[in-house]
Length: 63
Image 1: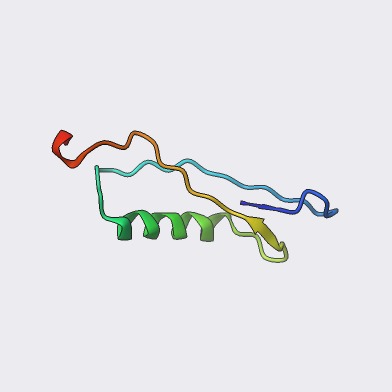
Image 2: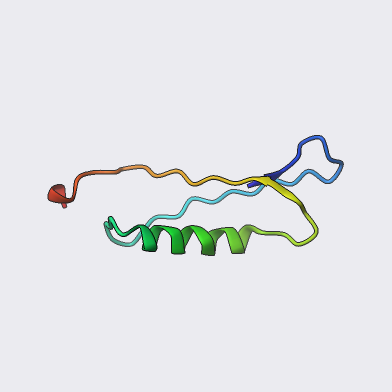
């Protein structure tokens, strides 16, 4: 997540989080994404953009 790079108080924050177990439950993924965003959020900054990336995705039958 980051603020506008054109603002004098530009701020950028990111984190990498690994799930402790495989899941296809989007509620779990969203819960973890929201908790991470809450931890990275800094009051006083108007964040412009945030994103979530997923890696090591596989079919349920491969677990």
